[in-house]
Image (cartoon, rainbow, N blue to C red; front, side, top):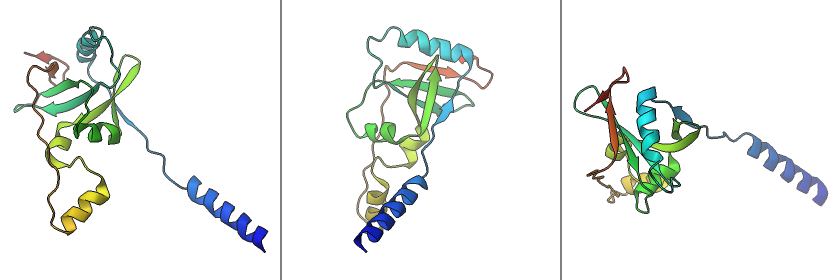
Length: 145
C-alpha cells in the first residue's frame, strides 16, 4: 500500500511539473542603424555583464532606447522579471519598457495585490536619466538628433 501511494505521488508530481508553462522571451530587433550605434557604444564598455536597456517614446512619434548600467536597487526587479530582450548582434540583453516604470511597481505580484487589498502603500520609484547614452529614432530607422 505504501509503495502504491508513493508511486502515485511521484506520478502526480511529474504530471504537474510537465504541465507548467515555460516562460519565453519576446525578442526585440531595432532598425539596423540604431543597432549599429548601440553596438559601437557597447564596444567601448569594458564589461557588458549586467547591462540592460529601456525603450520609451518622446513627446513626438519617436522612440528612445537607453543603455542601463548594472543596477543594484529596486530597478533590478524589472530587469530580473522581464520577458523582453533586445538583440544586439548575436547577444540578447534584458529590455524594460518605459511604461513599466510609470505603471507598475518593482515588487512581487502577490505582495502588490496584498498591499492593494489592505490599502497599504506600494513602492514606486522614479528613474532619472541624465547623461545616459541613448539613441532617438523613428519607425523608418532614421536617427533623430
